[in-house]
Amino acid sequence: MEGVSADYVIGPIRNSLVLQSIDLQIESGSYSAIVGHTGAGKSSLLKTINGLLLPTAGKIEVGQDIIKQKNNKQALKNIRKKVGMVFQFPEAQLFAETVEKDICFGPLNFGVPLKQAQQIAKEVMQLVGLPLHLLNKSPHSLSGGQKRRVAIAGILAMEPEILVLDEPGAGLDPKGKNEIMRLIKSLHQERNLTTILVTHDMDDVVHYADKIIVMENGRIVRNGDLRSVFSDRLAIKKWHLDLPEAYQFQLEIEERTGMELPQICFTVDELADALMEVGLA
Amino acid sequence: MNKLSLGRYVPGDSILHQLDPRAKLVSGFYFIIVLFIANNWQTYLLLWLFTLGVMRLSKVHLYTYFRGVRPLIWLILFTVVLQMLFTAGGTIYVEWGPIRISEFGLINGVYIFCRFVMIIFISTAITLTTKPIDLTDGIDSLLGPLRKLNIPVDEISLMLSISLRFIPNLLDETQRVMDAQRARGTEFGEGSLVQQMKTLVPIFLPLFTNSLNRAEELANVMEVKGYQSGIKRSSFRKLRWKTCDTITLCVMAALTIGLILLRLN
Image 1 (tube, helix red, strand yellow):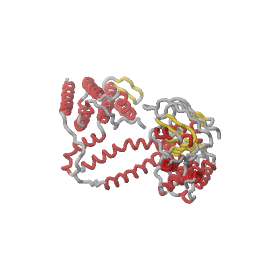
Image 2 (cartoon, each protein chain N blue to C red):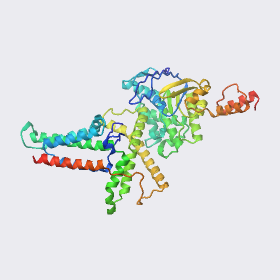
Image 3 (tube, helix red, strand yellow):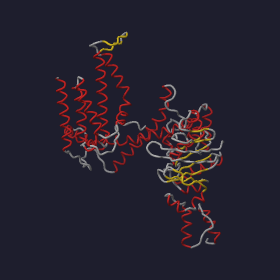
């Protein structure tokens, strides 16, 4: 895969500045999480990566293809093939009579022959952990979590190099959500997919992502690795972000005991190790 | 998807915004009837002045009105052309095989065009300046007498307000589904007519299923909240008839008299 460098400078879009002069580089093979308050422009940013929202100024480079204000259709199509986009509540886009047809919809649009598309459908069904006998069922007869998997499978079937997800866990029960998040992580690792995740849940961020991009009012206010961003607690508060649960707990412990742990702990295991290290547990 | 201006409310504080929805509705319907009095250029001039005056009073940008006409323009032009071709009389300007455009035909065509555009402008002016909820309250109140005929007026107005309420949601959702399908490689507005129709299936099917689901949810919620049809409900908003509403009706009467006078001339 080509390096994904996406530089945006985006001027006014319609009546409001949804995204303002954004410069961002996302390395290929990385897992970035975009966080920010409601209306910060996270979803708009995702849409520009896919060419669904065209920049009013500036450009977006995905590999060798470039999105500008005016584009030739082929470049857009290349980009949409390369960037698989999973929208919020992706199950709302399911339409075909059978799961198989729905999964094949993307590949067929990009000119993959039917036989091959059906083969791909089988593979991605296994990839997302659904039994093959569901292929001939109607997507509407499935459960919520299964529908979401089918929708994600439909995107994976396009064999994207970059996977862009907008709140993939929203509206699922905790177990279903964890499964989806783990699935995405394993796809990221096994297929070396560049992954970009929009989420509200800081625990998702610290458990799965390597990089964090903080947005506010259409701008990127912070872009860096997890620890450096979360260590700046004043800024986190200013952006109305939460802290990961383990870290909150750590701060509570530090306050009560007056001791300071050697590092920021993002997960329960990390916290337990750190506590043992300093002899509190 | 945001191009639909008919049926959209633009908040404001113009005189038109302050009028009682009933006054606006009655005047609007009355205007359509009155249109048929007009038969010469003087009467049409008067109607145009009235229409433009109303548009001006609404303090909504004129561009919004033109956008309201745009989706219907082909239908209007089609009717105009039919009128032009099939009205005979007066001097004949063009004669080309079976096609014949006469003086009367041309005039009739222009009149029909004016009528359509004015109707759209006036109804747009009403919907732009009236909240959907006020509109349905107005309709409810105007249809009130029909209750005596056992017509379920409350249910009709509830249906109306629910459908108006969900138009923006539906538009947003259409946009979302379109985005999702475009991300999967669908190109809209490309290829032959058949191909274009085919690309609509992946949009309409999700929309239909989602709408049906939502309707069921809404029905459940209403039932849980104690809604029952056929039972008298009190209303939160009360419509109040003001002097300016009476004046509006007087203006309509004056318009009618003016039109009749000009027609008799």
